[in-house]
Length: 375
Image (cartoon, rainbow, N blue to C red; front, side, top):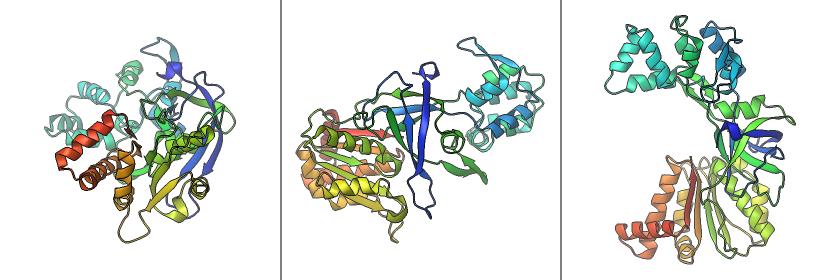
């Protein structure tokens, strides 16, 4: 799937999930998806193509000494578009691509910055250049008037879609898709930056207008078990909670009898307990076992894997009874820590050596009962 398959969807609602006083900005988005031909299932994601920030577009045009009306041909389709539209919708104007750097090196072979970057055997200078400079900042250092606009823009990386786990069930919210999205904000070389797509969704997309280009990205097995009696264990800190809200909506709607257990983590209970009423009502009605980990409420930080350790014996019993184990969220740290904890629980409560615990974990994965949606 790509932009050719994308269709227009409308943002209907953009409500805060964090209470005042939080140092995060996480929101619940509701989109009207009547414009999408494809239906979705729980576990699917929504791919969204953002527009680049207009201010960034204008700065890039200025660095190119361009008006924006210059016509460029699309490499794949051959269609012609004004340069301003290409910079807005089709190319990455945040991170310089290697292809752009090589093009500049070809035209400015004696430039000390480019020479030092390409001659560095560690590639660290290249990496730093790519991550610390916006495209317009890089281009402003060179007189690119001798390079045709078409050649320059063809060297940019494409503007890729962003993927968001769907937080709703089509059976419960027909014609809608719900998302749980956190504003991406960070600093690079002392300069504040925002995520391209989160800034687009939070600050620039008007409500109630079909503006967003999107398509459904089907899951690859990350969905509810076919057996409604099966137990499920869900680990979803932060925005990783999204698909599990969808899972629980669907299981309740279908009257599934299998037990549900959720591990949710965030910074504080007061400010970042997303969908608190929904989950606590499920606990009160006996439909959910809930363990929470709020990492900034004590001197010793507590994460979801620590709650798993505390409930290790029961968690092991569920797995031995055929429970499905799901993880959604950060790939680099959280998912690794959760897997290491899972393996240690299999060792401890299954009386297995490390290699035996790994073999058991591999078997659970092969049975399709250990499923991850990580990013």
